[in-house]
Amino acid sequence: MSHGGVGQVVLDEAIADACLAVWEFDGARAWLEEARRHPMEPLAAEVWVTDPAFEHVLLVKHRVRGWVPPGGKAEPGEAPRAAAARELLEETGLRSELLPEPAAVAVRSYRADWSPTLGLSYAAVAGRDVPLAGERNQPAAWFPLDTGWDSVFPEDRERIRAHARRLAAGRAVGSR
Image 1 (cartoon, one colour):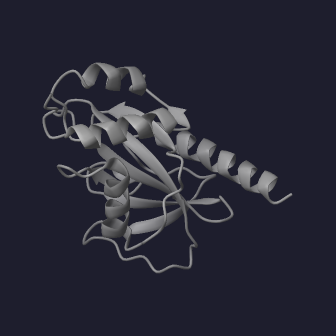
Image 2: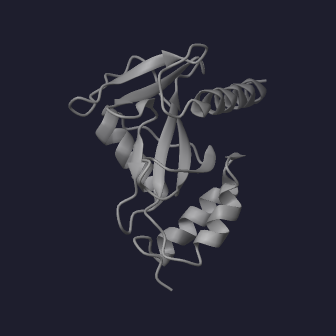
């Protein structure tokens, strides 16, 4: 069965990561189960990058969406995890290993005239001292997690904060 711009292998990887995601929003797993029966729009992938102290998040200034995690759509034949790593590098200049467990799966429309898209959020931890080299007219910057930032997706703030708290708690347990 053809899934539009999403091939079967990529769809299988997206489903596997959606099942492994720590957080689920917007009924994303049920949406994916229904959507896989029809031609699908491209998948979206992003990276929630926090510093090792889990006090800051790395965001990119999008011309329309405001400050958002680095990310974008997966290219045809590209798995969401690979798309997330590519977008992170393109938008921030940061080459960072993504954590094994996907952070979240969600469904959202990235523009008013676009149909809903499945988005997978991955996580990475990187030092704030690493130089950033974003795309032209789309700067990247670190934001304290305990402050707000201007975004068309305000729900992302608490989602990213909750995930950072979870990662911090896991590191604290692992260091005992």
